[in-house]
Image (cartoon, rainbow, N blue to C red; front, side):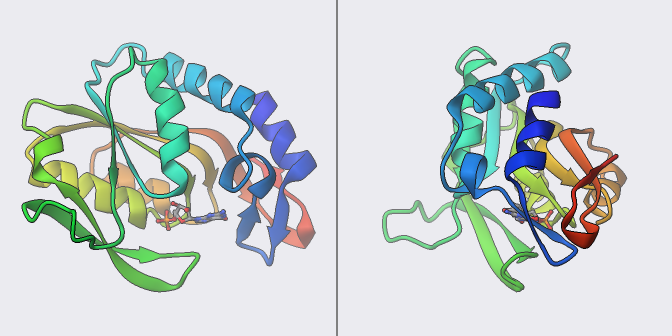
Length: 190
Ligand code: 5GP
């Protein structure tokens, strides 16, 4: 997706050799025009699949998923929660996730009310690194005995092994920008 790649090239900040910061258009300030183009592109890539719900994880995934959902006939968006709240249902699906950026484990949870056996789910997230967030979401969908149609990622870092782990689960991955390396402060696309 050219518009996304241009944004990454012009505004992305490389941290070390593994992290890309995109706070100016995706992770802090959000470029809505770009998100609409992202939504259209995911719709194109999953046009032949029946999808009943989008699943993501808080916080960065929510804004993206909500705009993407508008291109899939306004289907509901469910986001897995990271913090246990007193208002959260006690009947939940949950999975352990190791955070690449925070270097620690956390749990993600969704209420059993919002994922049903008959659901066909598209998982959406901002980044794909080692695949832990996406694998946690796949685990949750499978606990509900629902169907994972695929994973849609805005920015994939191909030098990490997220894609391999997800495909090993038999799940399709579509990424809109694929980064080959982040060496010497430069983003190199695949
Ligand atoms: P994974 O679970 O695939 O290892 O990492 C994906 C999650 O970690 C994403 O939800 C994203 O929030 C965060 N993440 C991983 N790599 C990056 C990165 O280079 N930049 C940013 N901003 N977030 C990242």
